[in-house]
Amino acid sequence: MAPMPEDDQAQAGAASGAARMRAPESILDLVNYQMHQIETLNASRVTRICEGRFGITRREWRLIALLATFGPMAPSDIALRAALDRSRTSKALLPLRAKGLVERSVQPGDARRAMVALTPSGHAIYAQIFPDVKRINTELLAVLDESDLAQLERLLGLLRARARELVRSRDDEAPADRRRGGSRRAWERGQGG
Image 1 (cartoon, rainbow, N blue to C red):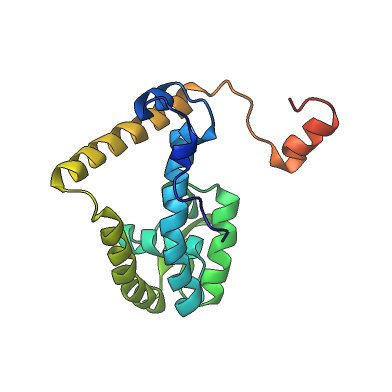
Image 2 (image 1 turned 90 degrees about the horizontal axis):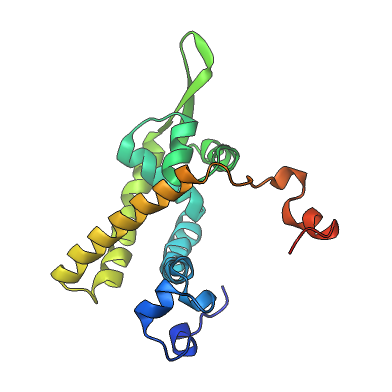
């Protein structure tokens, strides 16, 4: 991973942080970009643990953790909880099955309805990784006091609810179509900008 700038916000200009967030002047002012930076920096530590010590990807870890938390689920439910599309979820489940960390069972009477569950090995790897991930989370949040944490929890809840609301209200927007070439073909046809 390439090193991240120490503080991109210093480059964002003289306007106050709140004003820049309400009326972004560059990518540095976008809340998605700022959250992505935090996630990328902190998640790199989780990636090193998962890949370096356990031979699984961070995405595979996410699926293991969700199955450990919620129990057996249909692949579509895993995709929804993991915020992945169904095809990426299916692709991530294949190596987990090959590694013996999850098992897939078919519902009696309906071969199309499958359930995915952790195996004993999957539960064991979760039990080994989660304390380290919990420590990483705790270390990140150590700069916040209890009042800050309560406010962060409230604000994250508001942002999640608003993001869901906006997704539901934007059903009329053109969907992404990566199978047909996505933006590259649009650019080649002169429609990309």
